[in-house]
Length: 507
Image (cartoon, rainbow, N blue to C red; front, side):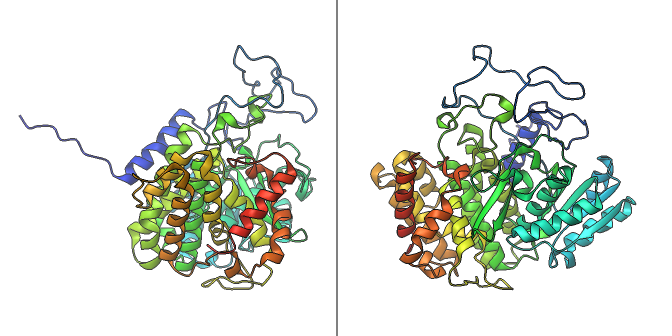
């Protein structure tokens, strides 16, 4: 008799199995987690004025609360539950060629393809368009999206989408393209809405999203944002010199097609900056407040926010993404022909997207929006064409050492766990030193990548910009509220941000 042999799965297989598990337990027709764009045509409706828990013809019933819970919770009660939701994900070299069949299966007849001028010339777009042609689908290509979208570019894109009236969207590109496509989809469903209607207060009106959106398939060509998995879309409000965004499960792509071949043309500088976004997605979701510490508990489960705080499932995705990024990002940056490293970074980006798309991010991202929006010296990052630009991943990572010095006191063990993944021997490290140890590990990793600014001063900021940075960050309550060790008092919050930006001047 031949002895049985147990084959140990690879890291990529384990990660893919996690994604499959999540989709199996919450399939597209799951009532609690269905993407509103799914083909069942049913969507829950919530009025912004009243909340009727009785079924409405043509809609799903409102979902149940725990039997012990009173009909309405007090607004400042702590959360007691978390949800995991993500787009369906397909991962594999060459799977872009299936996108035409996917759109046909969704019943699409009039597709709007969203990309940018650079990606429009690349293999990914060629494959996507050929797939649409093979299925004889009618489509229009919009290729004018911009890196780090501005409110003006988003408005232009929305005008095109409203005029075309598509019944499905296909986004081929990086996070900027995918975010633009999400907003085109949203505002096509609301043809009379203003851009700020769904932006959270105080920057916008914070109106509820209560309509079904069209199917959206996202094909990422960079490995960083994880936007193919999330309901988040980010853009610049130029007049206010700040980034903002809309986060809602309705914006999630119906399907993310993650084809490692599509990242082979990505320049090393882009690989580096987008990879730093993955790094911070993972670190921030791992160190966010626990979901059961978040306030307020929603009065109805449909109102539970996408960003909920760290939880046992998001932790799995965050740690695997962090582990893989530390191992593979330097390889992908310094050896552009390393196909395995680039594939693993695309998978890490998707894993981190699932993690932070449910747990959330906090200070690195909250502070980054003011950094990239202000850019007082007109900084342009090495390897990027065009005008002044602080890439998103750079603006996020530059404050990371300062942030984790600050957050470590809330949970030293988690920060030491992260430091150990960077290769630090933490066996003899005292709990009170956890923040400094993780900060040094992150700073050393940035040096290892090369061409990364060592603090805000390297981006052209000085002490005279601190107050503007603080005021630009305060509106980002959607993410600041998930930061551990954070104050709810505005004056204290200002002082905390002031110290963080001062500490981040030099890393």
